[in-house]
Image (cartoon, rainbow, N blue to C red; front, side):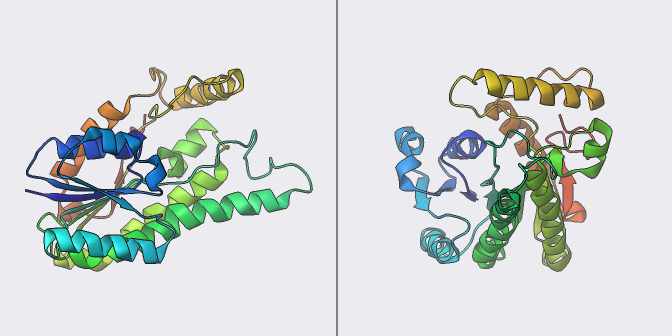
Length: 267
């Protein structure tokens, strides 16, 4: 029997992690959602071993309350923490660092701050809230979802300069995980940053403008991976990541890898 906490669990990759782990009735799964208003899919799942908890990862008080609830159920331990929740500003037409409209530098600052606050600071708060339980767990694994966009080599090879605030925050997140790994390796805790690949988590058909942006991005990706065919499903991504998570050991704690389990095959 294993216990899991998954953040950003209401949809997409987070929901698929919950669904997969809940298939084994002996597991105990805690699905953290930013708001209970968005938990319909989790409720409809009807799994008796899934506990839905409300906690925005930027809210330290809410995280501590959630950790206290987990402690009550498990008796004070936690095996796996899956840091999936993230922020990405997807409405800007051009979010290169120099692509914001003249006179709207505040938008650039806002996107940088919002990305860093959720993708870096929020993850730090989440790890800190659940760390006492993880230290008493059996698996002692902290898995944090990052992105190949946070890999400098991918950016330089592809020439992909957009989504700058998101990419910068993910690069910083990789260092966060390395710092925790360095501190807790001696205790046997395993920290891993993993990119899920390019995953289709859309819930509706793309607009013509969104499709144009996607095709432009696809062209950049094919510079580094000519055979790349397009995004994978959450089901496939999670299946691949679980295989990596299962085999990852404390000897390689702190690594940043793809869903293939390496640091060069991001797509």
